[in-house]
Image (cartoon, rainbow, N blue to C red; front, side, top):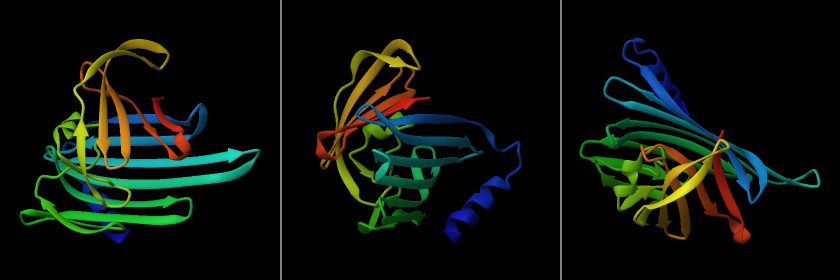
Length: 209
């Protein structure tokens, strides 16, 4: 946490002329058809770097009884399409996870709940906001630090409802270990939606607010 605070202070202390307007993706999250929370991604463009901050808060209740809670915070620093630093903390229904990583020389050194790893200097996380991640063969799971081999399908042209309006979209299917993820992007490569299988065969779905 101390490293994360120092990192944010250093970035936010940069002159305003260095920090450009960024982008935001704010999603309503559903489990099947039930709203369970939100997941926000805020990207700030810096002079030669990008700062990505994300925060997720889920809560599933049945008859006013809380059955599951999830809180996640993640901060990443990028240079181009290469991850330079990462700090994340997660509480998955009371089970804690932590990931920390940084570029050290010609290697990206990663420590997480899943263990330690040394990766190529230009590595990527599951950066859904950046379609370049679909070209990778391995990605970092920002919840536990696990490094996963991935497979990505060719895009399929579909129609998708976004904020109540139907529009053309490109749908990708991504496989990573036991995870099967569907992703939708606009024709201009803007991230629009995500869907994946949750425990018990249920569906977790992200819709843009």
